[in-house]
Amino acid sequence: MSTISKIGKNLRFMIVNRLIALLVSFLIFPYIVSYTGKEVYGVYLTVMTITGYFGLLDFGVMSALTKYVSEYNGKGDLKKVNEIINASFTFYTVIGILSGSSLFLVLEYFPFLFNIRLENLEITKNLFLVAGVSAFFMWPATTFRGTIEGLNLWDIEAKVNIFIQVLNGLCAFIIFKIGYGIVHFFISSQFLTIIGNIFFYIIAKKKTDLIFIFPYIKRDTFKHIFNFSVFVFLSALLNLFLFQIHNIIIGYFISMSAVTIYAVAHNIQNYFRYINSTLGGPPWTVASEMEGKGDLEGQRKLLFKGTKYMSAIFIPMVLIFFFFVEPFIKYWMGPGFEESVSPARIVILFWLFNGTLEIASGMLSAKGIVRKPLLIHFFIAFINIIMSILFIKKIGLIAVALGLTVSMIFGFPLILRLSLNHLQVTFYEYFKNTIKDNLKIYIFVSVCSFFVSRILYPQNIYITLAEMGLVYVATMFLYYFLLLNDEGKAEIKIMSGLSGFLKKAI
Image 1: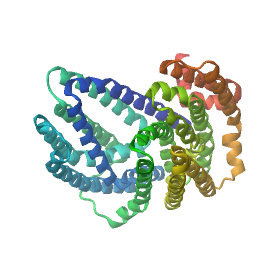
Image 2: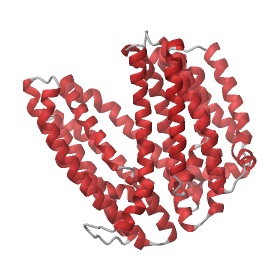
Image 3: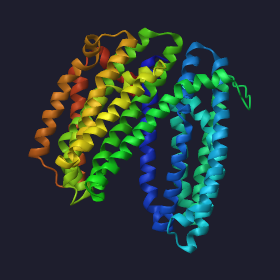
């Protein structure tokens, strides 16, 4: 299978996987709340949140596992692949024991920290018990999810996830319908996730000739993993701190209600982050596989084509949202959130830069270059915080939005330059092969969005989404039929799966 076919197949399944996850979550949320009540479901969400924070104990090992399995698989070195898997499994087993034990301790103090009615205490304890027991199994089992991603089998991961998500939705319907409660639903969802990871183990064992060694204690292997993972972990921690510190700055200098107003802008940019990471995931592991093969030319081609097509898909979304953000927030959030519009517009702007950087920054991770990007992220965070604090009294929430956007824009050329240097690519080559041909489509979508959003100002959220969708479809239609050459059209057909579909039909 060609690189384009592999990436296209993985992307298609990932997108469907995440759409179904959102749909299932959207459908079962009100259904479960109607049976449990607000307090019980609130306890469930709090347990999930606390469990999520324990995810920081990963220390970036999942990224290292995925990268090195992909890289050594590219080299054909299954012995090294086995070492990475066994070391990761041993590490996650230890973390599972620590995480599960800690959740049992939290169980003892949780009822005293939160105002929970007496009749719901038993449910609270049972939820923590399930979370604690699950941690013992869940953490080690996640090793095989990372292995599947490292083997570039994102389509298999997506298929399993889709099956589990749909089954989880059906279980929710049955469990509550026959009179059981949130604890039984939690047991069911955790069990299904573990079953999915066991299936990943079966696939991973078959693909890597996995020989289990437990406990696996080899200093050099762990050193190799942590030399990469610790920097990924620190970057993730920095990002978490950065967005949390915004809330503290806003709450201290303005008000707590302003925190909620800014959260609207933050959530919108999070949607773009989600889409960006979805599109950038499969190319990253393919680049890691190329690193194992020593295929620098393949990485260059992936940089050019990946950035060109990804930004052609992603940047128009950003531009459309920029022009439609006012009616979107107005109808989505209702009255009282007018102050969210300007911060949202400003925050959206930095994705015009980050949207073209995902493949390039992924190349750095694929090549094991993580120390310098971390230093750049510290520089970005410093500018962000300083700008927010200096100007928040004068211009309010705009200062926080500008701090984020300006700092990200400053960081953009630094990350890009680092990536291009390691790929031995000049900026002119990069611009010519990735951005130049897309500029026309960016101009078109901007002009179209501007006039549609003003001349046909939407009257509700549904019309807003419909107009945004129509502008996007028109843009993609124009891009494909008028701006792509025959080679580009053929590549898009391969990535979308349309080429294979047409062959079968004929």
